[in-house]
Each structure stands twice: as C-alpha cells, then as structure tokens.
Image 1 (tube, one colour):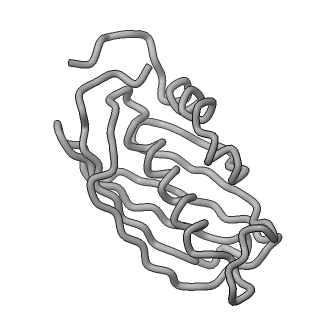
Image 2 (tube, rainbow, N blue to C red; image 1 turned 90 degrees about the horizontal axis):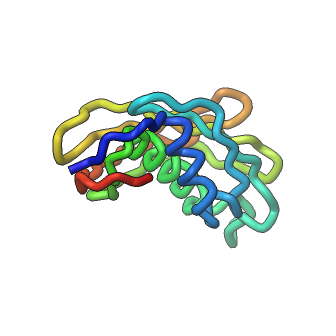
Length: 141
C-alpha cells in the first residue's frame, strides 16, 4: 500500500531525475508535470547519430520512455513498463530539439495507459509512443 505523505508530481519527478543517470546523459529538461502528465525536451547531439547519419531511433524511444515514466510515476505509485511500442514518422538530426508530451489515457489500480507524442522544433511529429505500466503499489519517495 502506498504510504500517505506530502508529495507532489513535481517533487516525485525531481527525485526521479536526480537518480536517473541516463536521462541526465540525454540532457533531458523537465518542462511541465502534473498528475498523469509530463512534458520534457532535449537537444540532439552528434554522439547520438546512427550509421545512416541520422539520430538513432533508440534516442527518441528513450526520450519517450522517460516522459512515460515521469507521467505514470508522479502520483508516487512505483510503476514499471509492462508493454511499449513506438512508430517513427520523421527522421531527426543533431541540433534539433525534441519535445515529448506524455498523456494518460487510463489510470487503473494496477495498470495505466499512456500516449507520448514526440515533436521536433519545427512542430513536426517525429514519433508516437504507447506505453502500458504496471503499478506496484509501493511508494517511490
């Protein structure tokens, strides 16, 4: 059972970011957080290129996965990914800024469903991500 304490979505996501070396390496900046929602962004770098000279798809996936994690955990109910998928619609290049916006479609007792829309700085959608999480019932902080 989740213990009752004075937590807010912003405090929980701040705690998550402090302990998330990978999101820090990506250069993620948290723009907005509220229950079941997060909006984050990052700037693409040269060391994120794949063998085709475009940004590796795993980078966009990782950005979406972080937005998903921040949205589904910010009620202080430790939640882990159960199923995820992504569709890529446009390529991305170094110097572009990607924004990921995660919205909650379903908040159940044991699962949650989230959609993440990733756009680049010209407002073009570059990927759409869907994630289902499992809620453990344990407090994160």
